[in-house]
Image 1: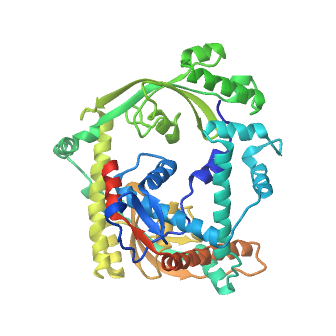
Image 2 (image 1 turned 90 degrees about the vertical axis):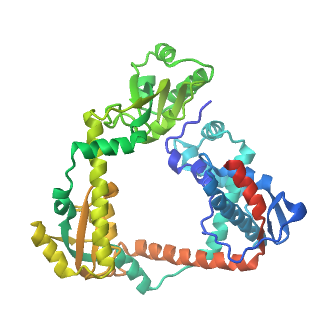
Length: 480
């Protein structure tokens, strides 16, 4: 059986799985006195011992992908943080009655049908995610207790009007900037010969040996499956039937015949969702690509959920394809890589000059004149103003002060700009404004984060933490 959630990303499951501590625990002054007969103990917190087995069980329960050796310290920090939270919950006697837990479950929108709690939806969730009811409710109970503890630490905050206006101004201040498009400045330096292309290809030959997965996939929307657009009980019943057939080993072709479905769509893609000609396959989301790349030859057909839609994905073959340098798409990609490498180097030179205080406003103007590139004057109305520049560029500009010269980039250095921040016009919000409450809450969050950091330091002094680093090394060797 397969559960049927339409809003998986906001489901309780997502919240329960992400049980990583909100507080960024850093454990000052931790030493290790564990030696001799304590090799099986990984950490002691106020005389309470935790074993290697407990820690490795924690890793298995929380890891959502393959664990790398360099992640073990982070997992250990989180594990210790969880144990400290448990101790604090016990210390403050934070409890939740069975009635409250029941109410919490029944009011989750993902368990609703026709605005009422549906036991069927709840059972489907448990089946889909391999949870028993006691296990799930135990995790939910712990999550709610943790939330109450953090509310105890950071609740009741009332920010001053000054702090509210700081939050408002950070987002809504107006900025007048001058901008030089560095791609125009560099354009005469971004030309490459066939020899350059060949050398880059030879030096990076492994980049052009690509794994491709080929097969078929079919979307199972209500229109195709039950003849209407409603996500009703009949639709989910058929979804469950199809999932059972797949588990029993039925292939895609027979399922299509049995349910009179449309012809499946074929695919041959790499891990980035690109076709063999390196164009993006627009029919398959990256999330669906990731699922396809997890299909094994032993179980070549799977039923998956992506963005509230269900798909059958079938793997036919996996192959390694070595690209040819004469392929026009390969050449395009090599040229893009070469240009980005060169742009990174050239922008780094300018950044170094700025950091060394060797690049002033006069140099900014001179660069424009020498390279015959215009200076654009742009007025940014707020941090959210992306009418001219992309969001990631505007965010970078708002991180710096008035009269500064900075280099900002779009993702992957596709576009690069030299920016002079000419004027910053500050603003504030009135209590009568409809936005006032929103910025009160933003200020509360900022203060709460500072409180959590202070709470972190308090806990590191309240509890004696002793780590057995020999045991940590043993676990690292296991994952190596």
